[in-house]
Image (tube, rainbow, N blue to C red):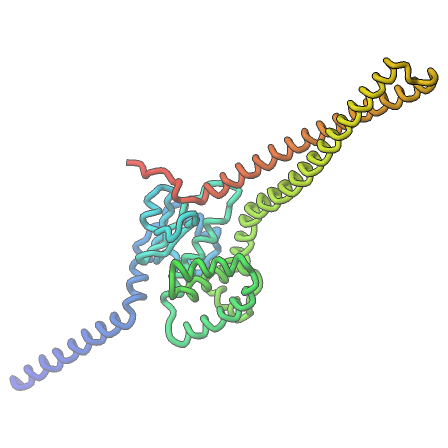
Amino acid sequence: MQNNRPKKRYVGTIVSSIFVIAVSLYIGLNFQYIFDWVNYQTYDPPAAVASIAEESRFTNDGLFAFYSAQPAIDGTRVFNVKCDRKEENTAILGCYAANKIYIFDVTDERLDGIQEVTAVHEMLHFVYQRTSGADLEKINALLDIEAKKLEKDKEFADRMEFYARTEPGERYNELHSIIGTEVSKISDELEEYYEKYFDRQHIVELHKDYKKEFEKLEVRAEQLKKQIDSVSSKIDKAKDAYARDIKSLDRDIANFNARADNNDFTSQSQFDAERASLISRVDQLKHTRASINAMVDTYNKLIKEHNDIVIESRELYQSIDSSLAPAPSV
């Protein structure tokens, strides 16, 4: 019996070793998931983040991904430290950096929904970075198909060029977030993929809504500019014609007065007729002058409206410009 005890201890040691190896192997193979799970379990979302999550309509998988990145909302310059601005004059609404999501605090009510779209956009970066192998190849192939459909869209092309300059090698990662949150119609297969994480059509509609606010101002500003140019051209032509007519009238009145002084009219009726014609021309020029002044008033009103639109548009863009954010409070 004494000879059996060491054997038992030996077997026990082997079992323990195998268990440790198995656990270590499991942790090694699933380190990222375990890391995310711990982050998810230990994250206590602030009310503002929880509100964004609810409005974003995440599924359980989507919420896990979002909360695992422990999202933070910041409207101070701290945001600029976390989210590096790659180029000047470029608005940064959020980023996924160092395994965390940061969202700029946009408070302008006209842009309701912009934080939700940003949250989903960044959550999709989290998901993409955890996709590999055949799954990644499949997703990239589907994204390529959708990107090809958007090749003639200048805004999309300019945006992808920006990412190519500032984030080389991240084309598919960015496509994954952009197409998922901003493109209305995509393949059924890709639609089904995104539905695992959030209500995609809801997010796309939110994106459309706040984008319309910018487009509305841009369209109105362009309309006003065309009207201003048109009225300005009409005023210039009318003023030139008015100046010519005034010069001609001055010359004819001087001639008429000289002839009257020299008694060159053959009859009173001739005098009266020519005088009446000159008075009619004076009245017509008075009317023309009033018409020009009315056009000038219209021009000034259009200028004011255009300036108001420019100011409103600037304010809207400033509300998403983190470079203008205040310093954090002490």
